[in-house]
Length: 435
Image 1 (cartoon, rainbow, N blue to C red):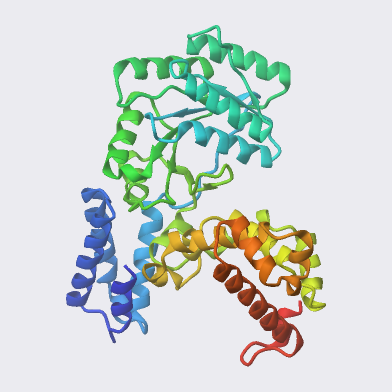
Image 2: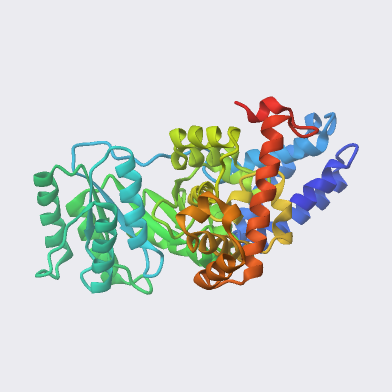
């Protein structure tokens, strides 16, 4: 997409011919990303119709106008605006998670519980997959990890009885939200559908959310259509959007089912669940980045008091390896290096030039080396002589060369920070770093 649009910006004006060429290239990109054929066709027909209008042809910057048309249509295709989770009504409000085995339902239930807990809610996790003990154990473990209540009834194998008792338990414990993790199957069958319909009748959930693995591509779209027809779906949670996925399911689902994507799973960690914003996803797809999401994440992750403390240390040239390690931990909370890069406008073009798996390994290696140092060594790295370097390398499972390289990078970073805070570097005003 980026390559196509870069070429388009070079045109002095848009003609029917170069619009057709561009649309052909965009079509290939969409189909390669596993976008549904009919969805891609309808989308490009609308883009072409608008792009051939007089207003665009006479524009001063026709290439940018075309990209704006693609962006606007993509936003509409993805749902237009963010559809927040509806948890209104008399507590306990039920949220049903449905989907096939392996889609990530149980982990998503934990992520959703953390999402609601951060927003002042008191959720209750309900593992109603009575056929797979591992699913119940997994949710109980997640609940303990999050300090969120989990309701279990080992003596019953009836999900209806379990859900009824869970609601009574929630009222007794003052829980305002029930997150029900339902049983999945390897494929959609009548038995599963009937069970889900009965649970839905009992719970009257405010939201019935379908959890889909985005890596299944077109299958995800077909599964969404079938679940919506047979059970009824209010929204979709797309998981595994951080992996090596082409992501076409995100573009197709709203168009095929008419149901909005409510959340996206962008990692294995329990805080790796984001509300879905069509305009932000459209920006990412078109290589424009997503600074808003990055800033929101940073505000959640970074401690303002800690940041001010660090700023003071930098001013006084007291930045230590311990501070360096703390910053790495904070950055890791933002997500993988690849996911962070996609949020910066213009940086996606470097994705192919970066070995992200190696970069992640290097970060782990850096942490291991710093963790193998004593407190005194982290605070005063200049005391690290040859024998200490050998001990640190052995303790971290690395080489002395790796330790040397880290110390060298640390000293270079200190020098650069000193220049920035003292006199500035050419092209970078000192005030920028002294706020």
